[in-house]
Length: 428
Image (tube, rainbow, N blue to C red; front, side, top):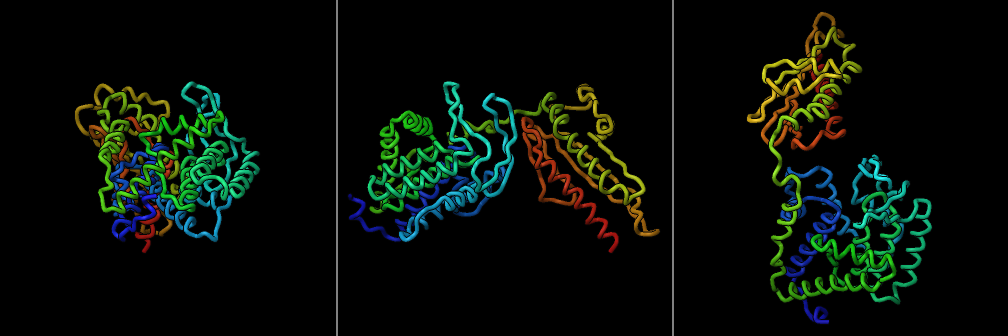
């Protein structure tokens, strides 16, 4: 092999390792729906520069996946150490970071919320809906421990006899058929495939997100017994990695002519690339399902936890100097009444929610009031939520995005924290 005869300079080895690192984390996460672009992946992983246009979870998982890639390389370099189920669970825990809730569907197409427990085998069945509408079911939860043990036994029995590409390919497919976790199975299967290749002297491979259809079709062929189709597909990716390695060793450029296409593909697929402008209907819908439920959540928390410390509490809700507190007090309020005279499509508007806790009564005659200010700017393309007193807590949402439960909880907790901080400040 030409690669075996070439000596890498330290510079060329570093730029090749950086290329594999970026390509693998970007593509493996992009295959699973992560929207961080290639350039922003590079800025995040190499310079720790964080773009503010992504969810916190996307950024967390990209960095965690990069750490997992580093870990499997360390495991592969240690020939005295072999992989175990404990290691695979650790990889899952590492790439998913922490437990979270995920929207999903039942086999009947009904929406359901599922708690993802990182590093633990699945407790509920999982499946994929194929392009023809049929449902492909993975291993049942009760089968997973035994099937994972069978997979590890198969790997240890075959690792010295099968060709490395065949071994890595079949391991990948067997793992996907089990789908042992509630989330992260695709990323773990590609990490494990690369662990096997690296351990046996091959460079890591990259399944390009632009090649997703070919990749999934090759996996589906393996599902019906055509392992050769999937092995051949993986072998083609190994050839790409070997050719890239040879170029790097010779000091040639390893930047691909189509690197710009990675950026273009994200822009073309992103729903948020050209956001919809503010409309009357969209604004009213966000009032109903996000903004006023947020105000009610704050009001409820204050009345449950804080009102007994004060003589009274007053809530003000003002949109461009027009009082809207009735929409909090009346659960059946008709928001369409705002359509004619209050809401505007053609300019930004400011919605202010101001809870005022009046006369703290646990400090003798030295009473004091506490004010909170929550502001929502209704801009042309997004609504922006801020809380006076915390300049770091800014939530930007497009008009087609409702507030998540986590975002609502974050704002409510920040309000509670500010009340406590102001009480302590006044008492001191």
